[in-house]
Length: 179
Length: 179
DNA sequence: CACAATTCTTGATTTGAATCAATGGCAATC
DNA sequence: GATTGCCATTGATTCAAATCAAGAATTGTG
Picture 1 (cartoon, chains in turn orange, purple, blue, green):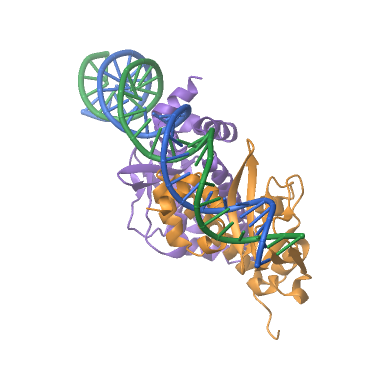
Picture 2 (picture 1 turned 90 degrees about the vertical axis):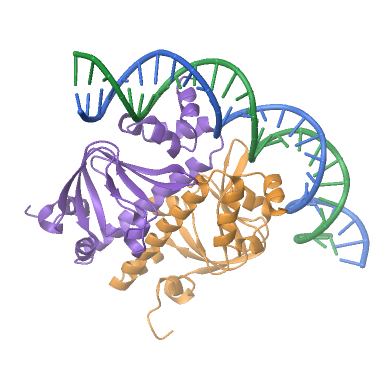
């Protein structure tokens, strides 16, 4: 690369951020609870789910697929151990970027710092949308909202995980989809 | 002030950010839907609620009281018109800081930019907690989680708004509180 | 390719929170 | 400081989604 890459470009570039390519097989864990997340991942190919377990039930929080970044944000930012799992839904390739290298890059110039702020803004805004989704009372509306905003999700992710993400059972989601 | 104030100090300081003191009476609106939010507010005294209306029902998203800042973040950041209401729950005093002055300050030096990034980080993390709250199935657990994390909320905010925030009816919340 | 395992669908039943309804208590304001 | 509206509580009933239970379809794997 001739120019200094922006944050997203840098994340996938081995040269800039010492990222390490990792291949995950279906159902393999990238992270499990009790571990501190010291990496952020750029997803090259495949799909991942971030979830937590409560009263023996898995609750899906977020999905990532080709082109996205994913990490256990709380742990990554605070250094506390994570409460979450990150698991490959199918065969997946990620670039694993160490936190140190990531923040070294972020703080290395003004433009990167600005981009980092914007990244966090985007995150906060996405979370606000997510909050609206989850506040919506009827399962049917929750489904419609997410279907409209993220149709790709339904191509990439098995319905049973989406059902959990939508705060309903797979049975309910199935019935909704058949009118 | 002798030193350059940090972001939060600046927000309440009339000299730095041209903030304007505003007094709101009970139930008065600081913002209504369809309007672009060009301000961020530092709450000096009182309490505010941020909510939206869907199918004739109000849904509470967030509360703010003394020492907090509040704004309709999406509108504030993107310049699109807001879908939310911000309303005084009781007599309230805020410092109203124009977006332009706010970002002028933020971009004026490296330290402020860093603080802004951290502010957005905090926001994203709070939103993640909120997501967990909302994913929790049982009303009882949702209540417990929030009670534990934000006991002050129950001192500041009427129960009917908290019930909405907790995604349940006032009746259900009332029954939970009496064991 | 064929078998195994997982995921999705469909039906019957249960359950817990919403709704409907009424009363009591508190607080705002005149 | 009275009065009026708002807020919280309590009870009875309804209802929609969860659960339980098979079976069908799809997908992964040897």
